[in-house]
Amino acid sequence: MSKIITLPQLKDINPGVNDTVGALVVAAVNSWIETATSRCWGETRTVTELQNASGIVWLDHVDVVEVLSVTTGYPNSDPHTVDSNSYYVTPEGRLVLSRGRQMSLPPSTLDYLSIEYTYGVAEDDVPAALVLAGLGLATGYYEYVSNGGREVSRAQVGSYTLQFAAGSSDGSGSGALGSTVTRDTAVINSYAMRRV
Image 1 (spheres, rainbow, N blue to C red):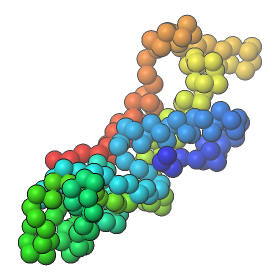
Image 2: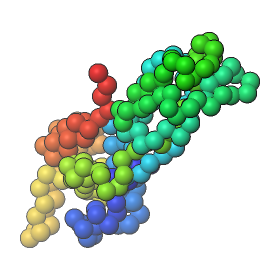
Image 3: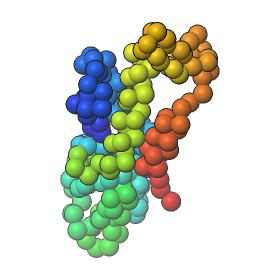
């Protein structure tokens, strides 16, 4: 799972965060951001993809760090490793195979490709705006969970008043989204994977 925000960061914002609930919220927000952006943040992963392709292959992931191997051949046969000088890859996940003499393979075997590569954004390279947006979502979500699934619209210490937002006290979820959630979601969506 991506590592965008951490429990200590959440506790820096709200020292009263319960470790168990806070860890669940951090995991949920990190997972949601990874799903929403279709990218891996704060770590790298190694995957192997099977592709039916010829000259250009779009890998399933962006932020490609390194291609470890490209093999070709028919299924259930001995694979042939493609020389690393016979292809190149862009960080956006576009693998381009050379059809020149360097490959020296029958064209039909290029229909079966196995590509092993690493992808992801290093922990030090996670954008600060994404971290702040994740923390914004996490603090709001933690407060929501801590208040029994209700959004507090007004709190008062003097006479112990606690007022919940309309539509949220009955659990219907019909309360309006706060501006923080909208802003943070917009920031996260701006980092989503896009291909042209």
